[in-house]
Image 1 (cartoon, rainbow, N blue to C red):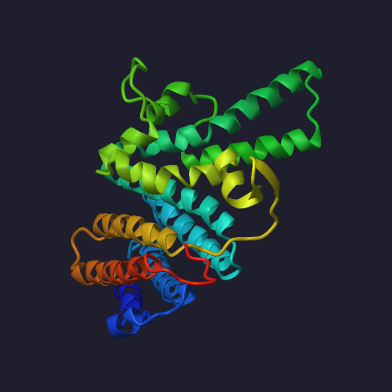
Image 2: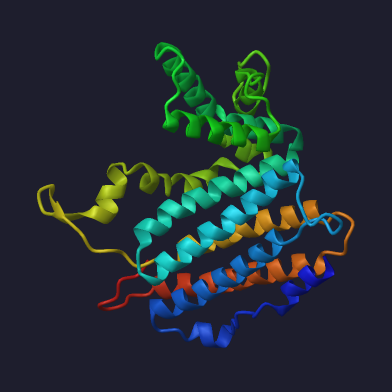
Amino acid sequence: MDNILQCFDDLKKTEVDEKIISAFSDNDQFLEVTLNLFRELNAHIKCLGLLVPEKTGRWEIKQAVLGGQIIRLYKLNCAIYEQALENRLEICYILSRLVYETVVNLRFLIKKPDLCNNFIAFSLKPEKKLRDNIIKNIKNNKGEIKPIEKRMLDSIKFDFDCAGISVQEYTNQLSDKWVYKDINKKQKWTFSNKLEEIGINQDAYEAIFGLPSHSVHGDWQDSLRFNLDIYDGNLFGPNFDWHKPAVQLFEGLIHVLSDGCNEYLKWILPSNSIEDGYGKIEEIRDKIKLICKHHERFISQPHENSQLN
């Protein structure tokens, strides 16, 4: 564990000098240092994903539920970074919404670890339904099992075995606890009240969680912003151009990810001295605040022939 913790100390820091940043004259300069900071935070997330019990070097299933979310965050962030380098804001927005939901699930499960089994059961619901349909088709086919059906049944059994849940004893009641607060199914665990449970208010939801949902669902707002040229008289044309990433998008990501990292660090190393870990993550948060302070000042000024985000 100590060797893994050392990796936090070995990470290269992003230099953020206020004198230099305050003199930036181009939006791309702000974006470059912001992306470097985002990449640094993701390197910390990878280190978090390497933290496993010393004796076994393996996670038990409830630990794996949370650890899996950390690995998912790392991979999503890698994809966001790569798409940002390609100047594809549209894809970054889609992926950022997945990051936000993953952080919410991570923090929610840290706070309510008794729901880990229900989280697993809920995720197996489509597999259970698929298995039931396959069994039904086999019966209708006089018991004959096609090779593809056998492969699918074996795959589903493997998934249930890994989860420690018997497919024969699986009930919707087990998965419903991830969706409903009470046994009578009168109160749901909606995404918004999961946010409330972990201390994120509705204003934050609308600002950083709600808006990227346009890109996920491909609604009118997504087309209007990214996929259409707008002409006089409410006329439109196709727009195949990609858009440059926005500094503000990464500001939101870094703040949300920092909160998730700190809570995970506290959960996985409750008895260790982890002040250094907190300090490094908070240092990144302070740096993005500084960058965005000067970026906001920069974009508030008139600039000729400049596309600002």
